[in-house]
Figure (tube, one colour):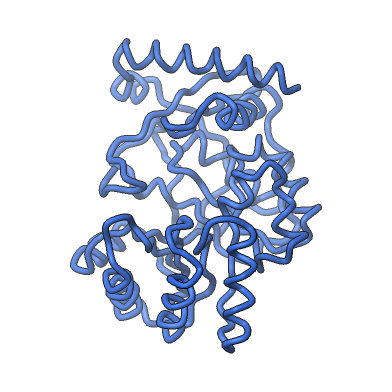
Amino acid sequence: MRVKFRGIMHREAALFEGPYGWGEFSPFLEYGPQEASAWLASGIEAAWEGFPEPLRSHVPVNATVPAVPRSDVVRVLENFDAHHTVKIKVAEHGQSLENDLARVAEVRKYLPEAALRIDANAGWSVPEAFDALQRLAEYNLQYAEQPVAGIEGLAELRSQLRAAGNPTLIAADESVRKATDPLEVARAGAADLLVIKAAPLGGVRNALRIVREAGMPAVISSALDTSVGLSAGVALAAALPELPFACGLGTGSLMTDDVAAHPLLPRSGALDVRKIEPDQGKLRVLAASEERRSAWVERIRAVHEVLVNNS
């Protein structure tokens, strides 16, 4: 990673090839077999089924600013080639609201016309989120992604904001991809839009079904994937009947290297819809140690057993 993101500086992923191409299995290391099983299903879909036919040839993407100090904001943004939309991480453990306000203010100063969105990864309580979003209202946020944990918390915060005359849209991420029923947030009226990621929801086709049944606008995002994993997110965004928001699929810009010779990196603020083939030379250079490879093979075995038992 170019900068620490989600608390990590190195990202591990397992890649495998099937009759339709390459798939990726890259749940974060703390995810157990049950949670990781959807990620394996997504990788299997990519390699053994392929993706649905696209409805568009490219998808717009946002730039991403991790929870860096204000002084590093411009340096991070310089890694992106267009800035029509920027997602800013907030509520980082060990940081204060003042750090968040300074970071957002610096992005707005540097990009006065950009659409800004924040992502708290459920890091605030309802009172903290209400205070933060009231103070952030001056920056005209496009939306706030998962400001608090849980569907009840989202619904309560959304109600309080509307009562205070604050129109900030609420987006649900963890409350969709980590829920036993990803449609519950829609039924509860707890959010204005959904953040959808292909891998945690079991693949492109299942994610498309969830968006269709939820009947809500969706933002397609990634989970720090390689270009192989990102291609699933791009395929999902390309297959949606409507794509009202820029996607969070530009995270390849946060990496120092990639498994593809021509990585999925934005051009003029968009990603081309295309098939990704890992480069054999890159695979050799970026190969994990034999110890880590063995650990991932055993992890895949354990997760596959869960996947079979759940089917």
